[in-house]
Image (cartoon, rainbow, N blue to C red; front, side):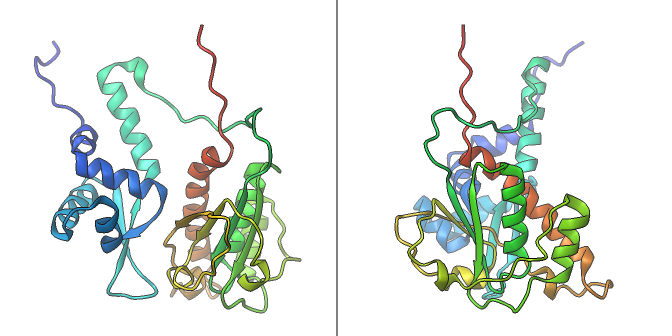
Length: 259
């Protein structure tokens, strides 16, 4: 016998609050610090912090110390967890309402390829991994490049090895490039993966969408593996998840025609 008054799923309680929904919406686009969220939602910091704690407690939002200023933390919306929570909420209402995200397909109205720039400090690990994964998954439908504010002499060997062994992508011939060499280029998205480079990224003009993914440098990890390969695996997995949710924004799925 069904309960007469079943409790709503936790996700519904969390997302239904107007301020929490605002915070979720802002964090769906980019990682932000508390003071930035305060400015974006126009609410006092103590109130924003309170609701962020509730979202963290519900497993929808995570926080990570800034590598630029350890007194700051970047908040990140776990889109994969949100997708699971939404699916569970739909299923709780009716089994037919559960859903599985579908991969994006090219839009017939798309006139040109969107251009994406990934940035980090050395352009030797995070941003080359992101560049390679997005190029691979977009299958030629997105123009992708990466650069750094202080490029290293070469791509980190662990990044090269991981992409080759786990994804069949060879970037062994690629070399880090400086951000200044791309000034004047048009980009639709400029995505920083490093807290330090976010503060030093030049203005590319053309009003690109600025997005921040606060991801630690895997080369700096204190890993038992002498080349830090395990840290690179974790980093590539996080970047891969974020790219999976970026793709539908870059390559819109055509709307199905309803009878």
